[in-house]
Image (cartoon, rainbow, N blue to C red; front, side, top):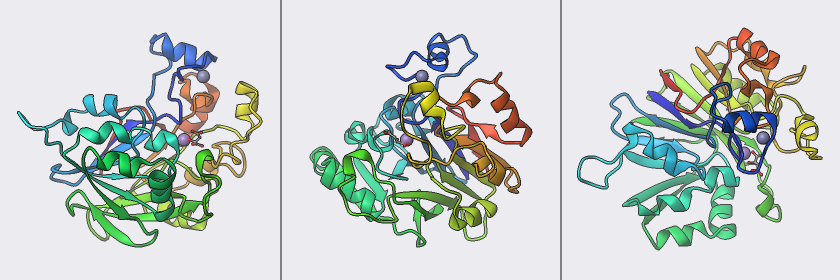
Length: 301
Ligand code: MLT
Ligand code: MN
Ligand code: ZN
């Protein structure tokens, strides 16, 4: 199985268009010390590389696809190797690019019942897309196995929380608003876990992470108070549904002892000091053998 990180930033990207914090200014200057990053999305394919699935469709999807030769249309056609699009949640940074895929000849979309409701009922994306292309929606049920990439890759969703996007806070509560995905070519094969959003290190997450050869997980914030320091925002990381990296209860303490070959932080917010390769926080993550994702990073399992 081959995995390519198309985008690795949290909502807004790095630099964020309306932000002039130190990190965003340095990323905007393109001097190489802080790498620009687009909003998170992942692409994967089985051993034959014939069909690809993408997870999350950010507002940056067009630029991400145009810069990925593997995902280009075959000569003289409009046929692309992307067969499936999955969603980890209904946040705008993960669904905001969907309308840009309207030129597709067909789209197979996978989402849990709550996410599907938000996309179709709150955002009206189902009806809008159906006017342009042939859309199939498949309901994802956490814990039930299904397949993507024309059957080449097995996938299982794990429930990671009930946090609803701001535009859907009035919607029904449910434990399928946020999920992660574990992908493998066949039962018992080496697997990769993609979980860019979670507010706590649950038992289900611990079990999946322990059993995966590659993990690509929520590295949004370094600390719970980070937004207050940098944006004067009242929100704490955990309130926003993101377990911070640092601290006794943080994700670093959980991830440092996992057996996976590749352990990668993604969905990096522009306030996170690990974006600076020269920061002590980045050094701390690196000492634990954990990578900080960058756009285009690949895993070969
Ligand atoms: C999040 O990751 O918490 C959301 O994407 C936040 C947002 O975009 O408003
Ligand atoms: Mn986000
Ligand atoms: Zn910034």
